[in-house]
Image 1 (cartoon, rainbow, N blue to C red):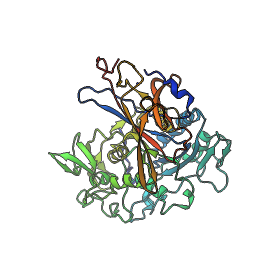
Image 2 (image 1 turned 180 degrees about the vertical axis):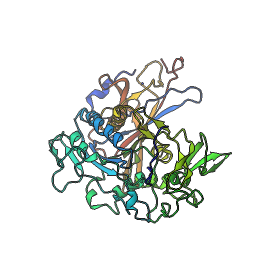
Image 3 (image 1 turned 90 degrees about the vertical axis):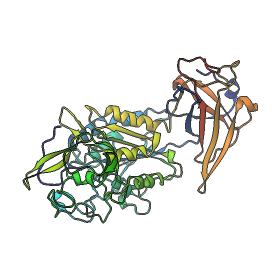
Image 4 (image 1 turned 90 degrees about the horizontal axis):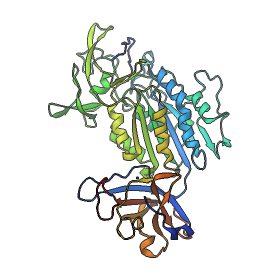
Length: 490
């Protein structure tokens, strides 16, 4: 939430052998990027993973770029390092997947009001895709009438000129004139709502495609309901019910922190290192509920594993409040202290709601700091996570063997197939090939020194059977504790 007033404050502050009999069978390869961790104590722990079993190289990627004040240098870091993101996808075994890439801003307006004098026009950008040339780009790389990037067959089929990295750079430099009460999550919802899709966004979201949503922002989400009066411009004083027209409103009426053993709104005064802060999804909260934003996004796919989210933003802690002068009213007002500051001056505030949103997607969520000299490591982490949906993926760790006389052949694992048919989830157990005489369908593990040098991949022999669309396999394997000799463990 940037400063919505005219005054601006200066910012300080992982070996298995291959099962030979399987080499003559057609197989589907699957694996997972999560590392299997060895149990530390009894009872025996297992590693649980899900593997996609049907080929799907379609990914829809939505970037939400904060366009409020102070974001220009951070946008520059995104644009400079975006090729790192795309290069990871281009390096997949079959090259760049079939992608849709779109950009939206954080500007969703100030609820019920129209405040152009504060760069907060009613409705803002309404989640519409941003496709105009910006920054040093003088002409749009997109073909006439196109509003998002589309590429397939390693960019031999595309709707833009040049390389996809250059095209993205041209349309993603959104500037810093957007509303300071940022609606990052609301913008994503507006952009992807299948019941009310903006004209510019039609055709982006494909039912069978994976979906990735990536937030680039240095302040927490301040999404307000469409009819909200939280941004009432007539309330300007600390004594007013909503307090000054300042981004602190989003904290006071959008967060709860553990204060004296109970969850309370952040105080309108000095407070140091508040703990346990979370989104105020109770009846007293004035922002949209994070739980609802998570449910909306998860509801776009019948299989939640098709959705990945990431945020490059401010750490949720530390969370402190200070008083700063308000030159418009000659009084001190409450302000959130930055949770991180770069030597070059860029900063970010605690992203409590955004962290909670990311956590709602479990292992398919990434939360990364925006306070960094370069966005290259963060973007590589996100792209690598995304690429595991398509490329070789590894099961890392030492798996416990059910038959110590034949090491590495009979790991203690269970495999269950799962797919959705007309809204109903169909599940079935898959036997190991070692136990059922290699009768399809059955599974085994194999080494893959090139793609998984420190782990194994799952091979599923399905014979001549064609897997149903959306099929995935859930795998649970018992793990060996590190440095401890036990039955079934090396």
